[in-house]
Amino acid sequence: MKSGSSPWVRRMCTVLSLAACLAVPYSVGADEGPPPYAKVVLIAVVAPLSGPERQYGIDLSNGVQAAIDDANQARSLTDFYWQMQSFDDQGDPGIAQQEAQFALVDPRTAVVIGHLGGQETFLALPVYHQAGIPVIIPTASLAALTQQGYDNVFRLCPPDTIEGALAARYVERTVKPANVAVLWEQDDYGNDTATNFVNYLKSAKIKVVDYPIDVDLKDLAKTVAAVASQNPDYLYVTGMSNVMSKVVIAVRKAGITAPLLTSGTFYSNALLADKAFGSAAQGMLVGTCVPPVQFMPSAQVFQQRYEANHGRLSAYALFGYAAAQVAINAAVVAHTTEKQALIHELGADVFRTVIGDVSFRPNGDPLDPDIYFYRADNGGFNYVGSALPNPAVLR
Image 1: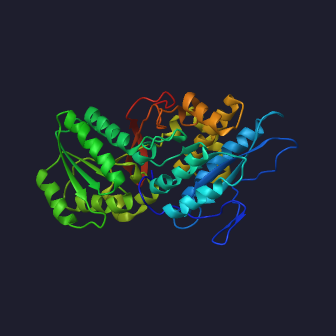
Image 2: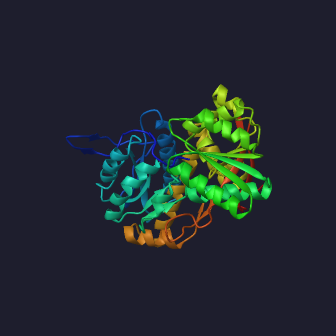
Image 3: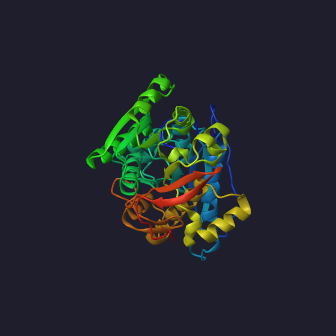
């Protein structure tokens, strides 16, 4: 999942015209309009909706819209009528701040779902905090997002610090290696995951050596040679996959055959489709917050319905649906869409979603964080297990 700074998807926002920007409503899915006298409540989705990664933002919006459609279909005459407005942050932190302001223009907006990029989210959060509106972060794992003391921020995926520790716990308990090499990209995500992975293994008295990788891959050959001389019996590679996939290829070309675990950014079928990486990645494990929907009865009906309308269910659509479920259920239980009441309800309750029960710690991180492990095999990912048991997963 997306964490640190990166380019993430562009713009089709709300009805607003400024000298610097024309914002146009972006709708995913058909909306026949509210019935007479219904109280219309908006969910703002802020994500990349144009550019090379636009599909991620569109998938997120599709997931949110599907949850809204389900809620509206099941509503009684006195229930809220939900609508979505999408805003394109273009995967740019500066534009994300601007889009955050646009998303708050309509007073009917009760909840924000977004952003996908860690840095985009980080710079937008002060805008939402000042406005006192609840924000549900679907996938961004940057640890700093929930370290600012904001009471209006809630996150579905574990922070990258927890991801690293859970990955190490899984390795220590299932593999029991004696000599581990950790290669990590020198950015926030790579540093957070690697630091906590290394610290966990050291506390378990396992030998572990870490190797920082420059984002421009300087001295890569020298680093790979050092890893080879260590002769590790296990490898952990973490960071942005567009950079660190090249490290995996270099490691395998150097003849280092130790079993390999990678972080959540590697959970990508498109990445496996690359011939050079796909060959190097054969048999590697990936740890991600995306649960195995095929083994979750609670998600089966949604998956079938979604894929009939939109094609293959992606992680972003899944988490978009879950985020909207949380937002809508909070309003239903609180009997209001008043922002402070929603913030209180989000922090106090347990919400049943397609990814299992969701509740939050006081800082907004998930109360019961988990990651799931998949093995790369012949161009696809096969589910292996999870760091911690999830009752919603029947395997």
